[in-house]
Image (cartoon, rainbow, N blue to C red; front, side, top):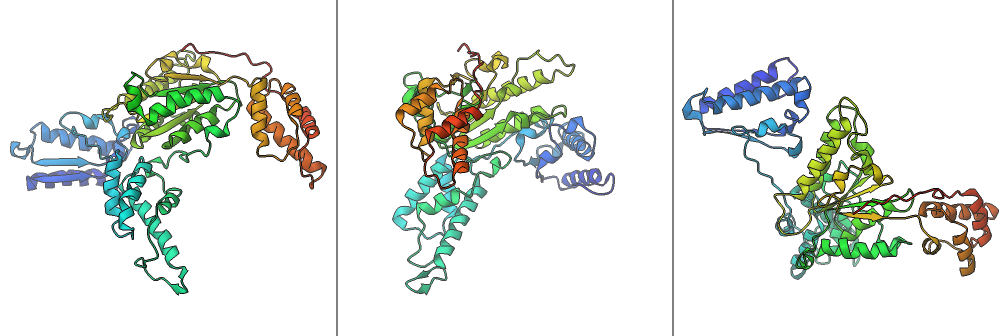
Length: 476
């Protein structure tokens, strides 16, 4: 629609509608309609705002019988978009584009049907095909048809590479070679490359962190397995006892105790799509842009459900309303927008049964400034406090670090080291181990072990960050 000459775009739209009326029965498809009907269009001047205004007026003219009654009901206007959350709500009013059809592939059975079509030309062992595709369909949450097609293309590329290798001294020229068949491992390799296209805006790599990689908070991890992981994987088993999977989790505690690491481990243990968001990247100086970013974030999470949405430094987005008395009430509008979007995904009209579409995990160092409305039941249901590590926890953390280091530290020396690191966070202990390793290398690059003396020297270089920390608890 966009033209270089002023007024040309508006003129072309009017000509399109006139042509519709002449043909009496017409279907007009407005592809990527979000370009001219973005939620912020009404707040800015420009060609987009003009086009949006003209289209709305022309649609209203048809429905208000300005044109011949015989035309009414025989003209269909279809808008398509992959950013429905960004479209101006004025376009959804009755008489305009008042019917919304969301084309999603949410169930593994739907993905299986698409995979069967996309993989028709791939050489499977017939007895294994259904089993392989069923496994893949359960691993591709949030994938749309084009993503699944690209996945099959990547599998085909792997087969071609294998096919070009010499087999019994002869080169294979095509995929019909009896020695080359699709295996589940081919899809596993392809999934390392292919991710849901809807997640491209965010950091989406599933963290390579498991509960077994975290030390010193064993009780917290065991509680999470029972209250989060198991209900998430087997909701029907827990719903019989009136236990629903948590909708939101707040992880809080002092800096450096592993809040982000634990949150990423929860995502990895669930094995579903993962979206990592830094709150500072959501905030914008442009009026209304922060709310738009929040809407976009939740829309992407919902489009790729089931998924884990991890929001770091949540206090930036959801601080107590009224703290900052600005004329624009920016903080208040951001918190309200966040709560509205969060309630929207938790009451999804597409949800069937007790399953959670989106598990929201948030982390903060300052729980005391988070708006209480966010901490109510039904939003961030579960509050997890990670305290500064005590003596036993520091021993556990150091033992975990030593598993990946060449040391000859004895148990007694380890005990002394743990006693001497009061006020150290997990991050401080990690830095201590790093400094000890560097001291050993500087001393002699041929050293085979990091000794206790190296840790003692490193201790004088590393400061305890939590000596003056005063714990703040949230009443659940």
